[in-house]
Amino acid sequence: MSSPSPHFPQRAFSGVQPTGNLHLGNYLGAITRFVELQKTHECIYCVVDMHAITVPQDPDELTASIREVTAAFIAAGIDAEKHIVFNQSQVSEHAELAWVFNCVARLGWLNRMTQFKEKAGKDRENASVGLYAYPTLMAADILVYRATHVPVGEDQKQHLELSRDIAQKFNNDFGDSIRGHGFADGQFFPLPEPMITGPATRVMSLRDGTKKMSKSDPSDYSRINLTDDADTIAQKIRKAKTDPEPLPREEKGLEARPEADNLVGIYAALSDKTKADVLREYGGGQFSTFKNALVELCVTKLAPIASEMKRLVADPGHVDAILIDGADRARAIAAETMKKTKDIVGFVHKH
Ligand code: AMP
Ligand code: TRP
Image (cartoon, rainbow, N blue to C red; front, side, top):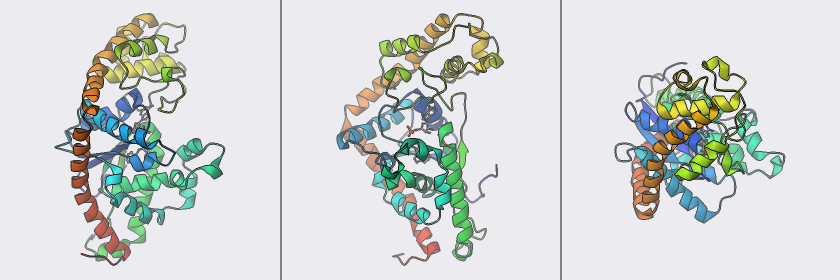
């Protein structure tokens, strides 16, 4: 993969939708990565409320979810003072740049998006225009900060590729204007790099190892929510689907055993080990022994986050203040990009 042009600072951006329950997949695939990146990058983490309304939302629940995701970020160890945490709708430049990108992206590109096909289902005529245009807003989220790195779970790979295509097409279409406005290499937007790393980039449902763990699964037993208490976590893991074989001693033995693979992956990610390490310890043993260890590990890791989230959401004024402060700092960066974008596109505006 090509590295970003040198004039772009190493900046990370990612977003999480405030819809329903945050679960272990969000935590391991995204939030723990966000925490890690704070050491090496300037980070901007966004609660993407405008993406949430691409499907119907109850307004009161949406408000509560925005605060809950924010609380999860902070409880997991994101430093909202050193870095930026805010909700998308407070920075109108996201929507402004998304419009420009709607005019850069091609229908054919959006028609290939598998997430739209999945979410729209059979009744595609009845899906919102926003659900269809979702990926151009996502590209705007990233590129309005000219972010270079995007930590996400595996399911967002295709959207990230589209963001790169949009950045590249914008740079090509407006190349002369970009150079005319002082960017000698003609690269106004970086091509953002997806960072899909770690042993749990795709955490699967506890009821079916071939399905992604998801906020929208009707069975609560399919996922571990960040707000679940110890008893609930224990029950869900004990009931998690497995097969009758003991755990293998080597990773190769996990092939074609999706449920076993998933639970080992979760253990590895939570304990910062590799799957091979985990199998060296538990391979050959019964599932029940391993499940007991997994319960203990999950509870130890998640209980402090759940209690800190509870404490934070009990004080919505404090959470809102974090989001307002983050939005002010985000807007300062976004407004600069938007002004330059207007110059490049040829819009008249106040300098
Ligand atoms: P969403 O809840 O769809 O806004 O997702 C927020 C982040 O969590 C994105 O980076 C997703 O890729 C990631 N994510 C969601 N579900 C999973 C999963 N089952 N396994 C790993 N990462 C996930
Ligand atoms: N589409 C992402 C998801 O469903 C959320 C998202 C919106 C995002 N904008 C983003 C992720 C920008 C990374 C960067 O999970």
